Image (cartoon, rainbow, N blue to C red; front, side, top):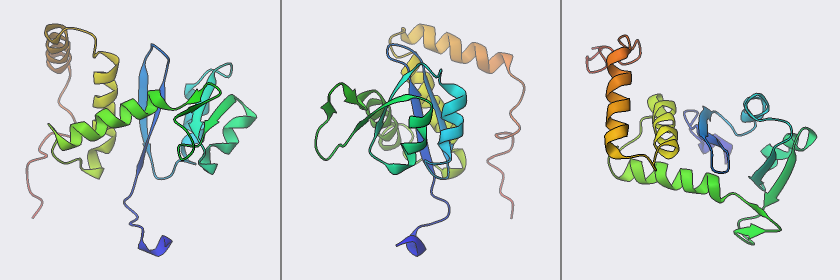
Length: 152
């Protein structure tokens, strides 16, 4: 099975605070995300994760509540609904306004989805002013300058 997997595959990992911020990052595997999670999350935090074995190392540092989605959506207070709602919005963005998400820019798309998630309760006017203000205050992007030019 592994020989059929493309090396370009990436996974998006999300850390969400209950009624707080959403932060996302892209990794080659979920296991690679453990070090990032340990840097991002306070040790006193309760982490909710699915049953994937890649999350097992988190038990050494955090109180981790696990849920088997095949058995239930929520069990004994454990659920990943916060993360699942983020991924639902990210998938919807791909089907809707993004049309297609390039692996090269996957982190940018995930960060945009996090920003939208964090500010979804703010007015559209506030969001437009914030995005426009940030864009006008920023220097040209090294990543996006000339992206439309072919390297023939």
